[in-house]
Image 1 (cartoon, rainbow, N blue to C red):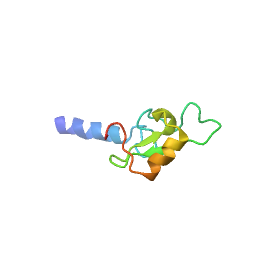
Image 2 (tube, rainbow, N blue to C red):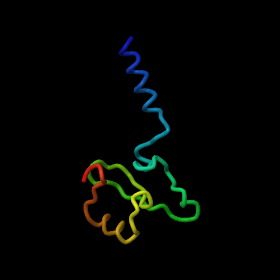
Image 3 (cartoon, rainbow, N blue to C red):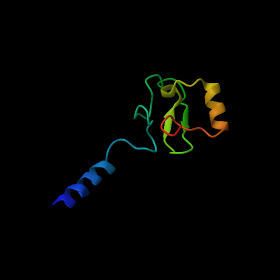
Image 4 (cartoon, rainbow, N blue to C red):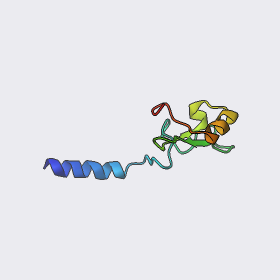
Length: 78
């Protein structure tokens, strides 16, 4: 019975709304509150490969470009 529960829990987890490849690891959304009229800038952690909105990180666009040019690690991997 316990193995059935684990199997069911894993199926529910896999079918959850959160998609690691398409959602911000910080806010869990695909769009930010201010993204209605502008481009959404993203950055991916070079270690864990999670994606983050520039806005959620509080990064200026020039800091984002500099981070993209180098290896960038999120707060979990720093």
